[in-house]
Image (cartoon, rainbow over all chains, first blue to last red):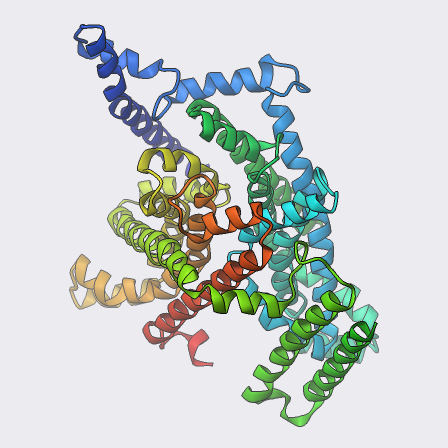
Length: 287
Length: 281
């Protein structure tokens, strides 16, 4: 709580810079309009006009807030104009892919910890895959699956599964290896078998790593889904809204979508963080 | 059918070889550590090729590696032009601007614990957001050419690098700072000679994260509009023409560029932070 004051100060400063930016960047258009009407604007008129344009270069924060309010609360959640609807389309694909990607990642990590050949073969590729822009294949996956008749949720979920897979593999291998030799020796003196060592030592001590990589994976999965919604044909979802907003110059719509995406990402990370702190507390691992 | 059987045999043979290698006495040598993943990668490529031929997978669904290699060989000038547009101009330009801006900000707010306490949570929060979504707006502001891509890259990498640098500047321990104080070192002397060098492992952590983000940002921003060159542009148009060989060729180039970029930053890190325990092992 000690940092509440500073954080609020920074947020207020960002808002202030945003308003100043909105005035400066939208002033040109307002002046052009006034000139065409053979009027000259006083400073206060100019400032007001920069705040209420329909397609501003940079919408003022309150315009975005109004668009958000209309998109979230003013229309029914099933309507095509509702941000709740588009957010849900994106979120459901993200979650589906996230769950499958995480499960597959954990399985592979377990295999790699117990099988040396698998570890030596796959681990360098898993690490290298973190340095390449995997998102670039998103449009291809969508179009290829479309051409064999798979549309809707599944292609986007595949992308988000793929993106959440690698961080989980790398994190979990690290986590499952984190017990030191002393602890493993101790279990050996207790005559514990491989399965027992896994459930009683390796799995519990991997939990902090697991949750850290889950947060990375969730953020990556969301980005993957949004990018997957960009290419041709996507009619629903936050990515589709972003693209249509950019085609028609609806800047306020783009910003509202961005806020929804940010809220989704923050929500996912916060939920994982909550589960993490509850789990670690129950396990007595909380710092 | 013969292709499918061949794929199966290659898989079994490659796997057997890796099992033997990883259990052998030389498993810890450098050569074997490189050889095992190479065998794995090669057998995946061969199996891919064999299965695509054996099962008659149409080229619009999955082209075989040989077709992709052919595309790369015949389209080198195009690929180089796209690489220059997206990687050298967009990604590298944005990377240089974004990283230097973030490191400078971190040094500027270094003297104000108040600002640090405010910016760290905000930065950590922003680092988890899908910042790449800002691309359509920046494309509107800065036009279709590489400047808008560089702007997207700056927006994506600024906070991760800032957060890491701020954390790094706290890394020098109190004993070392006291030592600098007993030598009556000024703020800037202590910054240059102790705290910045001590922060380097953290800064490079941020710089390495930023390499991947930079390429992703530059490629995805091109989906929202670009001149008629660039990797993102080429991927989206060739996908539209169902020329998947070319798409895979671009992806291969992007993967190589991404790994090389990361590798270069990691090498610089090795040279700069040679003193750090993680580099001496």
